[in-house]
Image (cartoon, rainbow, N blue to C red; front, top):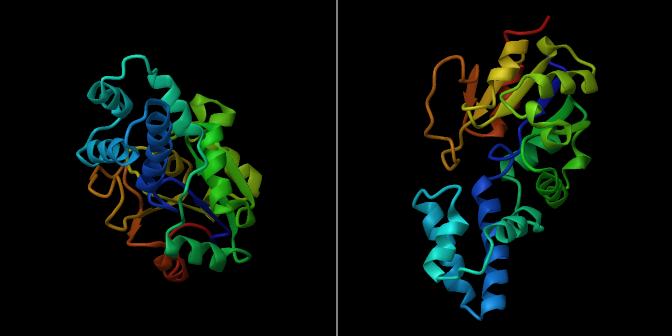
Length: 229
């Protein structure tokens, strides 16, 4: 019998690209005000590069294009990580959390820098829904997914067995391996607009089930999960 549902946050409960654009907006405002540049142009450059596939070096490339050699990338990265994000839950995620609250124990496991993730949690007011939240950065780097350690910690916090839990994520590169090793049923949400929707991997990495949005979750569980007693 399923007693607990554990969620990933980034890409699962909201569109991760929205946070990226919110961070770009904060960084672009800083640069435009400090150097008298047009905010819209700076922001558009960051977004365009990102949408064209640039990852990890976005601020380096921006500063090269703007010929700003006295700006440290680390400063822009700090602004990006620490800004108060303008982001919203997916409608199906918000509806599902409201529906599931009180019916199951709810847990949240998220990778990422502590302050960044705390800001997201506050922006979504997520603590009203969850019985336990684990930000893996608080524990240590070895707790970041795909490690099974955060899942073990969450099972302990929720006081359930692995066979009584479900884990929902969006990224097969890291989300499901640790949970499956413990015997937790895994579900991938694949809406069609996510960062990892095009990723196809082997059975070890993939979830046990895939759903198009979280509104299908309760129906799936009501059909009877192949785990539990």
